Length: 399
Image (tube, rainbow, N blue to C red; front, side, top):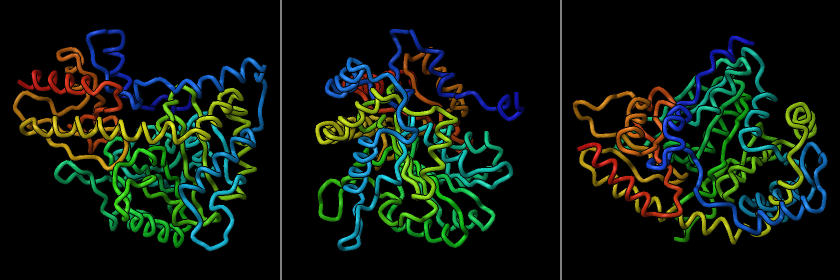
């Protein structure tokens, strides 16, 4: 076994969950998923596919019908700004993958050689930094900085970290766990700089639809700012998406990536050596999810906004607790009151909350050392009353 693999750090989120899974008295908010099941018409599409006997291999890149549906959806959200131009995201830039995490790993496998320099913005879901390490990359992190509970990016610090020797920049926005979101101007600055340095950008935009800000016209924005809004097809950019969050399909394991057209065929070869292809019946469910996205995603986003708007003020009412309202994502990221007797180790605190309060949260130091002392609360709950009960348990434990 390679030493790098042996030295991989076990997920702290899973470590906390393992301490509470199976306990009926624990309110679990540790994982990044809704407790709402996939809509029945999506499930039925998979059942129909199985009943038709679609249990065989598919094209490495995915069913053409699904790739076309994804391209249409991406072009709708990120239209070309050139009059009369072809769709901004064409089918020849799309690969379907066995989950968003698979898409991220494939991108890193395709781009990072041992010894290559990789820059990542943190705190971030730990898989994103681990993947570069697995491939032998030299990882450098640029931490976001908390200000009154909101995590912010120092653009000068980030750009200074990206040089001509930087092979890949990894950025996740809207961000898990902080809710931080890039602005379009920040994306332009990053893309322009990376064009000069020859650096690839791997943009994890799986929370793109879970965005709660309003557009300039006063209406709810269709999605968070995306690198696809400002880039060209030939840019050194890979954007990763997933069906998990926006379509309530976490357990289905299906995602996709958007990449330069000349990267797609080689990516198909790489998929062959990883998973061969995504399951056909799961892809059939994905097609229906996209066809009826307006019946799923807007409702999911509106409900998550209601959850956010219930949880954040309740947490802010706790004296000394530090939390800001996230612009995107599905998480409240907060710092407990700095009181004598509360450990500064997030993992220790998260385990104490499970055993002593029946409350399951994710430890901040699972996402980066600079997030130690913070906790992540996934507010994707069918029943908002569960969130209020969770806050009540936290308050009792603090007292």
